[in-house]
Length: 85
Image 1 (tube, helix red, strand yellow):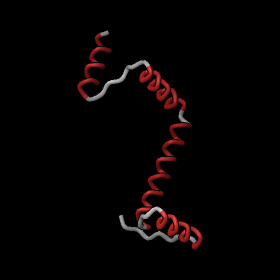
Image 2 (cartoon, rainbow, N blue to C red):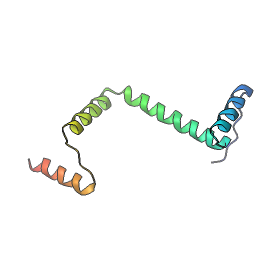
Image 3 (cartoon, helix red, strand yellow):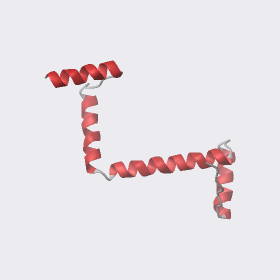
Image 4 (cartoon, rainbow, N blue to C red):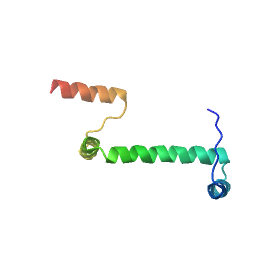
């Protein structure tokens, strides 16, 4: 998607300085900023969701107990074992 971005002069100057400092193009710096914003927003949504926090805590406990499967076949075997038991 092509777009034009008009920034206030102060923000434009800061963006240019950061892009130069990070050896990125302005485009790369803007894409990175948008990706970071979206990730932070998603994190805030998860932190605000008690059910998601409980699920994450359960996942941490499972990892701590060694209840981890790597790869599709291992995951299938784990699920099959849980269904049988």
